[in-house]
Structures are given as structure tokens and as C-alpha cells.
Amino acid sequence: MHYTLAYRKDKNCPIFIDGVIHEAFSTGAYNRGMSQDWHYADPGEPKAKLPESLVLITKDKRYEFDLRTSFEGHIVSERFWSALKTLNIGSWEVAKLDIVSPKGVPMEQGGYYFIRQQMSELVSAGVIDLDKSSITYRKTGEIKSIESLILTSEATLDFFEIDETTLLDIVFLSPAAAELVNQLNLKGVEIVSTEKLGAIKPA
View (cartoon, rainbow, N blue to C red):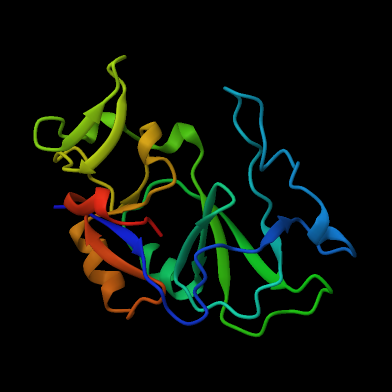
């Protein structure tokens, strides 16, 4: 059995991140779009590698969540990422994330990172057990939605994403990873079996 992370309403754990990410703070940066080559690339082209550090400029007052999917990646707490790094998680790009207000005032809280995987690093969709999963297909034969997801034994990583359009930006955990992070008393997320994928809002 594998698991994923669902959004859970908790204090200082917004479902939407009100902000932008830049390489450094500057006056007015909150109102500027994200056009950097590490954020945007032409179709079929890889994005540039993440810088070692980034700045999230936000109107939110405080964060306590352990994972939030946004900006085509994931914002993760230092404790969450430190735990996962002890497991077999494949290749991820990681940038230390400073968090400030639109005026440049640092947010007083624990540490965060911005993480993501390049498309080339995603686990093949071949790990999906098509016979045991509950899947709705389009007339073209493409997957439209997945109500219940079962993965095969070929899914050997402990923390990963899958190269399937309907699953992009959703993270998956092995039983070992789920057991480890469950000990953290997670904030803003809950561990859910992939069999219930269609009934949750991914974190």
C-alpha cells in the first residue's frame, strides 16, 4: 500500500499561498510576475536548476504547515524535509526558502524549503496498477481521472511523484515514509491511502 498527503485545515495552514517567489527581495517584488528560467520554460524544454536560496514574498502572517503544493513545486517545513532525506527519495531540487512580507519584514517561524522534481526525474506511470486502480478514461484512451490508485511493487522510492498528467504535483509515500512523517504530528496535512485519492484534496 502507498500513501499521499491530503490538505487538512489547521491554524496558519492556508490552502492557498498568497505570494510570489523570487531570487531576492526588492521593493515592489510582490507585484511582479514569476518569469525566471527556473520557473518557466518553453513546452518540452527543462526548467533551469533552482538557485540555492529563494525568497517567498507573501501577505500571509505566519505558516505552520509541513507541506503545501504551490508554484509548480512544494513548500516543505525543515523538520519534514529533514526526516524524508533519511530515506530513498530519488533526485529533488531544493532551495532554502526565506519568507518575508511585501515590505521585506521576515516572517518569524521555523525554516522552510522549496522542492521540486524535473520531469525527467518523475517515476514512470508504469508503476500504476491499471487493473486494481479505479480509473476513468477519455475517449482517446488517456486517463481522465483516478478515483482509487494502486501502485505496483516497481514503485520502490519512499517519496516521489509520478509522470502522469492527472497526478502531476501530487506526492506519494511508501509505508516507511508514511510511518516516519506520521511521528511528526503533521500540520496542515494528513496521510491518506492512495486508494482514497479521488475523495481528497491533495496538499
